[in-house]
Length: 388
Image 1 (cartoon, helix red, strand yellow):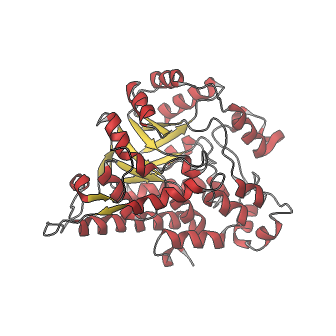
Image 2 (image 1 turned 90 degrees about the vertical axis):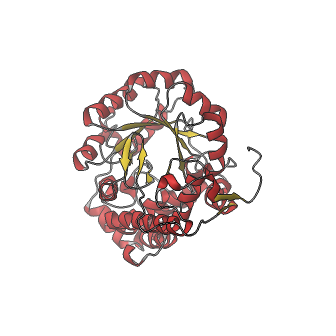
Image 3 (image 1 turned 180 degrees about the vertical axis):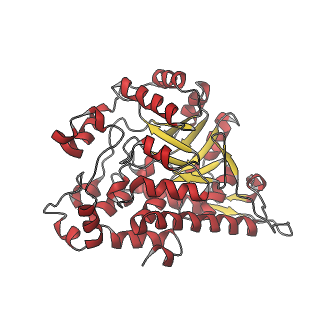
């Protein structure tokens, strides 16, 4: 099944599973520990009902909205995800071009397999670069300066990576980077010839934004990953975020905040936006779904910062529910990676088109002609969350 025959994100997921060797698919699809949080990220949307209003003029639906100071054609954008070359030889460039076509933000990860400069040279639409505060503060500062020079509109700081989560699927499938044949993965690679052929034809696999910091020829991609992992710093505090705020004069987005208290702290030191995120259920298992934290975050920070629901989006109605609860936008990673794996840029465009169509249809049936029309009176909470 190609992307054009997929009618929802679940179809794209199944297409990706057929196209990818098991280690690559489960790297996208999996979470940490018992994977309770990754399941909850999506199922939490079922706790909210949409309340339509009828006899409204919905002859024209406007999906545009302001995200991080930029006017975007959609109320959702593409979250940063690492090492897209694992899933398709089009890598991050295919995703960025799809984002440009749909007029929304593309976010590039520090652990991307395409450099931030190449992305900037490829697309003209808004772009954001995701960073960590590393042990090597010089490298973090270098990223800031490179983003300024390349014209990035926003900087995203990920704060929930003091260490990697326990992703047991990767242990079971023998996932290593760069991909190579092993006893656990040999049969899976052999039975997915399209992916294996393109890995052979396009073997270049490097963490393009940090490759200059280590001897890439001596260590290979695993050496690069070991280097970056060694740079995650468990001593990072809000003082370091204040330091980063002082280095970057554009919109600063903090990703990975899950508590209202931390949201207030982020607002107080000058963050412009928060991505309410549990890293797609890949870090701490057992924490809340991002959509469940929208109301408590909004109560904590008011309108002082933009709020983005990051994670669990599988339908356009999920986006509308998040907006009705008080979010300014949504972002997602897995949904577009399924598209990338199933068909490169065409697959990512299919994911974006499906969600765009679903958001537009949901708004039409809800009686909302524009994003600003969506409000809390369009949502019913099916259970008390304990935060209101």
